[in-house]
Length: 203
View 1: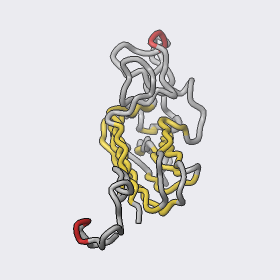
View 2: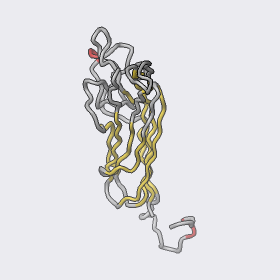
View 3: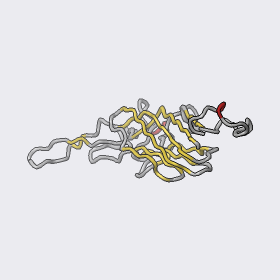
View 4: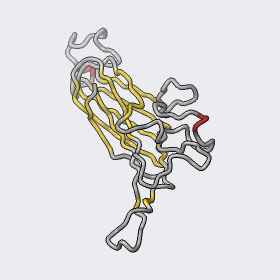
């Protein structure tokens, strides 16, 4: 079934009963994804702070109090039916990191008499997993507000495929404050406007 129009098949080679919507490919679209949290479609909510804990002008984002370290799952879905073959996933989104405190003022160079701040990049890592195995990983965005994309593809056996999307917020730098002067938690990292497209191609 490569390169031939279906009208060119020999008689009874492919019957109408065999021709289904997913005979050659099947697509899944999450645009935006729905995390189940009211009014938060397309946002990561696994590390979302409570309204009472954060500044009113910031996202209800991950902060240094509700995040330890490592990768966190922000979205997961089982792709089915999958008949075996190539599976490609594209993930797009926007990110926010705390940039105003990224200068490590206490860092020193060879001239110990002078201190120069060096940029402490707050990368947001992103990665895609199929059935718990990493198929694509990026260092991710580091700007205060940025856009990111990551694409992964893998040959997979037939059967349902669990697609997992994870992100890794940045750790606190040596000069990063956890709260403002009033005690409100400061934004550490947030991703929003997330859209995911998956396509399974079958032989």
